[in-house]
Image 1 (cartoon, rainbow, N blue to C red):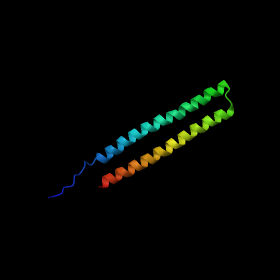
Image 2: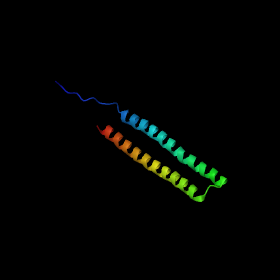
Image 3: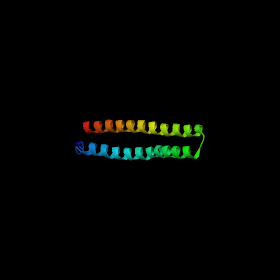
Image 4: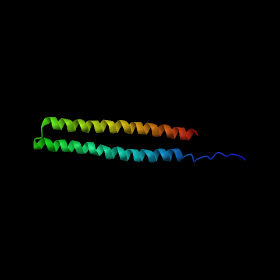
Length: 90
């Protein structure tokens, strides 16, 4: 029995990378919008007279969400890019 290796189209790794990048970007934007919402909430709460400590806690959460979201997005893009290159070299 002869074993044949199935070759993918040259554009398949590029299409996979593009699809993963689009989905990852959408998830990044959805999570990032929560941080933007917290920022808007802080501005509103400042006008209402909420204590400074409470505003600082919410601001800390906003910054944490933004940084973690960005770092995980970059890690995801790096892993996806690595997998695309590996797939191209197969």
